[in-house]
Length: 403
Image (cartoon, rainbow, N blue to C red; front, top):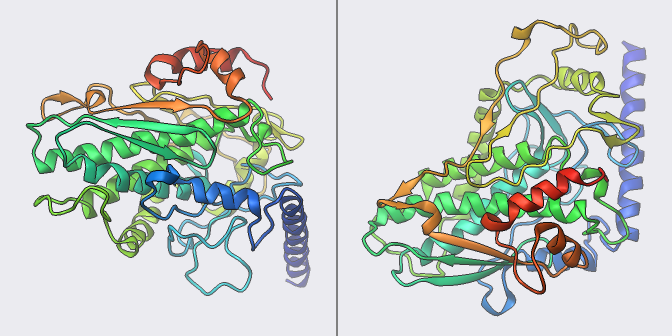
């Protein structure tokens, strides 16, 4: 018992040292913790409508981790039943600070699910809050019959122009349903665009490159689970059948949304077959040399699809015994079938295809804009239109050397 305790304390000490080292690196990049520096202040301030039309406070960004153990990203497997209370105004970039009260949000670490693969809790929570954030922008304006174009900024300098064209015959309930569907698709687009930027070298943290993490195998599943969780909660708490809200008005109370996410998140994870932390660690170790090696992911999942391009979960073989990660079961029935996520391209609301309710154009403003436009087949200063240009961009990404 004493030796186990010493081992546990030593592990915690090493993890704490590496977290301090990561914090020091972030501080050098202009984003120290817990007081964020100028870089992330700008990121947080921009996570909203463009400044001239800003309406809402943005959600706080959480810093994700790698789905394996690396010196710059210490491994931490999470218990799905001990994730604390969700907060759209999060505790901090590196997760729940030491000394936080019980029930505080856990926002750093990895879970493994038998149907969804590895999930990063920070990316999942960010996708949840981004979905709500976009919903707050679009839902009130869908009450209006005239087209409107909203300008939004996510965590990067690139501008999203969202055009809403609700059919005039749509009922309030149909407009509510469309608002949730549109919010989920735009939020997922924003999370995916971040991966595109980092693939091309964008450095949101200043001097620290994020290229090794671009499209890592936990990113897209984490985003999809977060988006779908938020959409499910919004369908429960956001309907406005009387049409009482004004354009630009508050959609739902933040505390109500947070409480609903807190209750729904463990249920969703268990539905995906979440495993205990020890088994998650064993599965992570089992994929060394296959999915990751020497602090870099070997498996990347490039998924840009928003209209019917499916995302398939990547699952590991099940370790024969926890602690013996090198022994893998070869039986085909070792785990349930993986999830296939997609956004239904045939969805119609009020008799109109959902794709006709809205459109998105991205104006790249980062240093990587020229390279991304070239890869997407877009010339000059033209915006990138996901429906038209993402197939070309995805093909270019798959043909490029892995960063």
